[in-house]
Length: 170
Image (cartoon, rainbow, N blue to C red; front, side, top):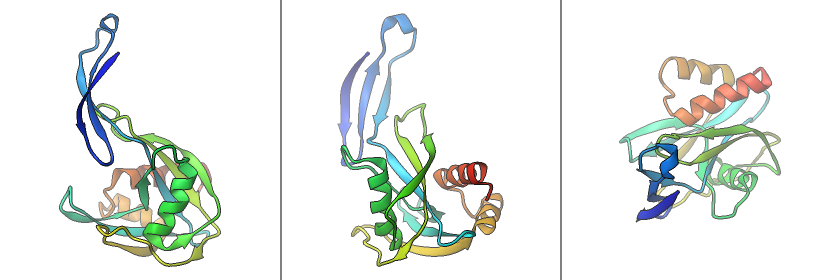
């Protein structure tokens, strides 16, 4: 397999991939991404912290779980603990893995690690200058109602909530 760079951005790069001819696969452009995390911050056994996040790409404010891109060579757990405090103001010493999601494997190699954060301590948000995020304390059942009713449409949030329910029974 051969790759040639098409575009290099701050968070990802686009490469043109030419597979080995023996595979019979066509060449295509692929987005290479360092990976990301999504966190389910459990304030207590039945309440989680969601965020309202203004998303320029879709021109809307979305209700989501906190998430973020991994720094180069950063462990996913480290990213999760950092992003949790930055986006929500909640901190914890450890997170529990629920699994890994492939976000859009037809065009993107991003692996999103899903974590649950418990034993939270309230601190202050440490937002990036371009972030406009507010927090919402929501019951877990209400969050699922919001998915069903179309109030939550963010795919990583829907998938992470489903993993949480399947693995914990909540």
